[in-house]
Amino acid sequence: MVDGGGARPRPDGAKPGPTRASHCYTSQDFCQRVFLAGSPDDAMKPTFTLGIEEEYQTVDPETRDLRSHIHAEIIEKGKLILQERVKTEMHQSVVEVGTSVCANIKQAREELKKLRWHIVRLARENGLRLASAATHPFADWRVQELTPGERYKNIVQDMQLVARANLIFGLHVHVGIEDRETLIQMMNHARYFIPHLLALSSNSPFWLGMDTGLKSYRCKVFDKFPRTNLPDYFPSWGEYENYVKLLVKTNSIDNAKKIWWDMRPHPFFNTLEFRVCDLPMRLDETIALAALIQATVAKLYKLHSQNQGFRLYRKSLLMENKWRAARYGINGKLIDFGKQMEVSERDLIEEYLLFVDDVLDELDCREEVEYIREIMKMGTGADRQLDVFRKTGDMKAVMDYIIEETEVGLENDDVDSMPTARAV
Image 1 (cartoon, rainbow, N blue to C red):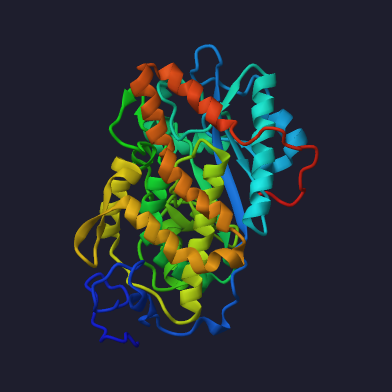
Image 2: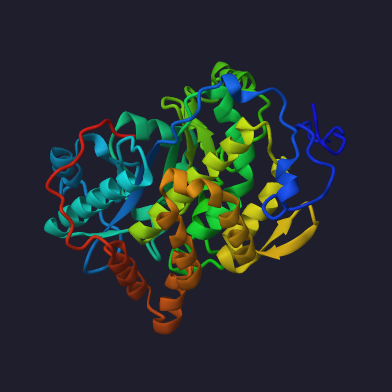
């Protein structure tokens, strides 16, 4: 193993990193220090295809509380137009949509825009409103109805109150990586960026009518599930497979879909699935985050293909940054573990954008990633929700704002045709 500066064993058992302490974004020579064992030359280059899933709230226009869409048959009516791109979730006030496998972010944007527009229209036609946020400001999960079905019944039977209370709404982004060994290495390195993505997507400051003091309370609700948060480091795909087999053998899970990490190898698709993000309000925010995620994986692969990389940190250290991201969003500080000091999250995001800059044109996603700076200017969804509440003191006003923001960018859309490729 070549380190360029003298490799030494790591206490966490991960591959040795560079001996020089430095932040992975800003130090050019740091990223050039070779430490990955073996060569990926024989591995197939990833396609970096995209799939995006969003989970929406269905809301009563009078009370602004959550209301079941079951009796309005929104899912059934939606499937007549959208096929399998729309589906139920465990709670009856949740509608999930998913794009087909998209070749690039432009295609993903067009398709997701149509999906949102159709569901907004169906909700309105059936006496409901659609809202895009990661928690409802004041809804009480204890009075929400569950969706009938064996799958949801089994989840509740297994996890009881933890499952019933999981009334949250997320954004999932799939990036196509066909070679499984490459995929597991990309997951190892992409863990570092999970706190940054959470901070940028933060859109759940309220719970049960209370200001939680967190920008992403959704991730703390989901923490109660088993097998959540950041994944561990896996030296190989075989190590990951052995982990899954052990859980299945011991009746902990029946398949790998019940591994709910912030980022995971999808058990059925050849994708690395990012699950950490709160559901943003605006379509443009979702697309910006998806583009940044795709660019992150492409940049990490570029380093990997050149037998380069940057230091791997322990999960316990990365979790310190995830907590800060959940608590403060983009307005706090994260820890630079190389420098052993706190750094402004906003500064780190600028460095993050610089880190991925050289792959943006190849992916044709520069415009979409640039919207990250717009998020920095206007604030995340959490920042904007809190601003409305501080001005009005009214949770219903917050809900009205979320509903308005959900429809931003959907005007004058041509939705007569939908692609027929398989859904994610």
